[in-house]
Length: 253
Ligand code: 13P
Image (cartoon, rainbow, N blue to C red; front, side, top):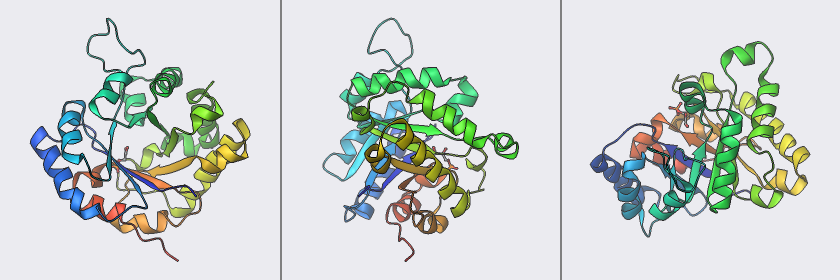
């Protein structure tokens, strides 16, 4: 009942030409897949070009960040209505790179969530613990805090537009994937928390993606875990062949 989502976060990679070639290769490779929500998140400057290239395909567009105000004197920022205008259906917020490198707080993430809900855009909220937090038994507290504060005052109705991405920081770009059991444990905890904060139906309906070194070789078993509803893919989303294989994952019976 939860439609899987496979999203590619391209981070700070690819020129206009490279971006449109990547999706042009991807389109035929995933065209037959109607069972998965397929999302790509290029850099801001490539959004328009990628939107044109994927027009009419089953690939959806996301941005990697946004500013929480719709317009105004905010030099260098981009707002949810403008992201919608360029063709985005989703926006990633709270990525660990933004939290760590740009000092983004849970409060800022929460104002972005409200601005996106207001603009009727889908939200991909990233959460995840560092290695130190995991090793000092703070993992569940960290996930609880990131979810409680990140989703603060979002209604159950607005939660229909929220996808949560569990990305343990120690697994991002390191080649170290969480084991299937580690992913399932965290996802089950997150779902139980969403149920506690909202209700059973919201908990059951909310999609929870895993992110952190997802590759063609580990996606099948990750996607076979009952609470893993998709993947947020970094490095492997930059190669059409790898990303297509991830999109066309084969759950293990
Ligand atoms: P990698 O897949 O490169 O580990 O990156 C994960 C990620 O941060 C996706 O948002």
